[in-house]
Length: 116
Image 1: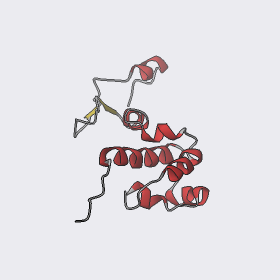
Image 2: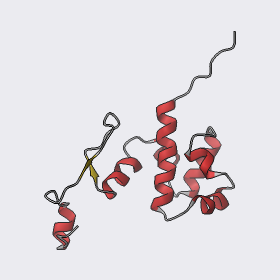
Image 3: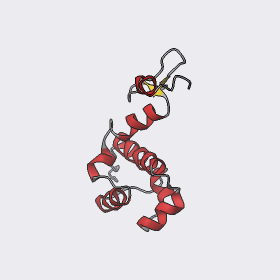
Image 4: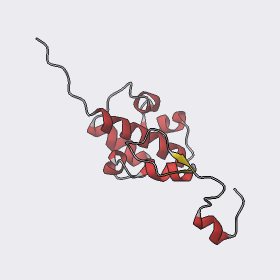
């Protein structure tokens, strides 16, 4: 009987998402990141290709992060959700709450930019 391969599905998904979010945060498309890393980014972001420690190191260097930051649950994902206007997002919640007009970000108020 062949043993089934164990996978850390949740960790892999978070890592794939963090690569995509950080790439977008840096303003890079997949082709540009491909040139920097020598890897096919879409295969990793989509989960088609499994990561090794080496690929995590390559992506983290290219994305100007420490390797553990790509694995973090609350790091890039939370930051990017906030930047996109989502609040109260966590891994148990399937749909994030969107900031409404009555819930203006305090940093915007301080800058005097009351219109969203």
